[in-house]
Length: 278
Image (tube, rainbow, N blue to C red; front, top):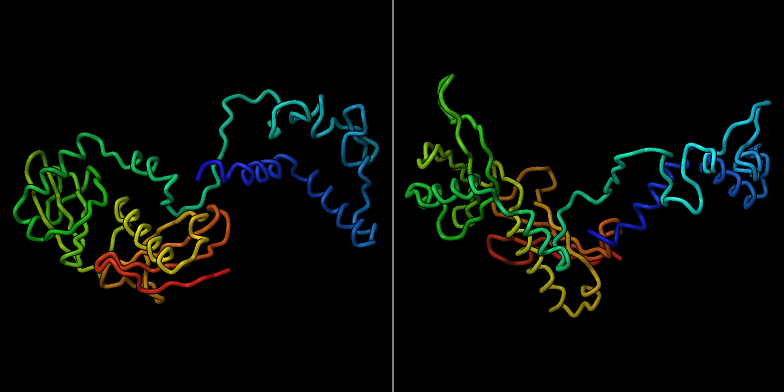
């Protein structure tokens, strides 16, 4: 997600920067609220800047953590605080691992799925092959393309191939297509119940559409304020379903707890199960 994570990221960045000083301050606040000042011996003046950029303990004086002479930028400077004089600063994104499938994230997600020219050529070669077409049927998804893959059964020193990984909704199978140049070298099909690749981008969006339509038809107005996140669903024992099942959860943002839970069978395009968790 985008703007929805800014406040949380800032809070996490601040805690990382404050370090022990922040922990001490929090402990002082807890001690004051609980009526047990002895819970921490240091007073605020011993922990934070007392006006001239330093603090005392054990007979020594040190520059304040957040101050004009400290290691980190202080109030009125860069925020969140940064190591003073640091260059090439990178802000870490604490976004959840689930791929965003909200309408706001739709265009960004699709843009990230644009394949390189060589990948597109390998896909074209794969989809034009008669054996691949027979293995796929009419409904299928292109999951990924990787290069430098060893062709099953090939000997040492033989050329590697582009691997086009597809999923057939008609056949309920993963289809691995090994391509070298303009030729399909090998086609391998694996039943969905034994193994499944991650959901393709288009599959995620379709699952989110089906789930959202379910909640709208159910009259749940809250769905309009929630974003959807989609992952491949597995069975309770960790094994794969015989069909392509997606788990779609709806949250306020990617760090909030899910409110609407939906299991969508992409093979039949139906909702298998839906729960409210509020």
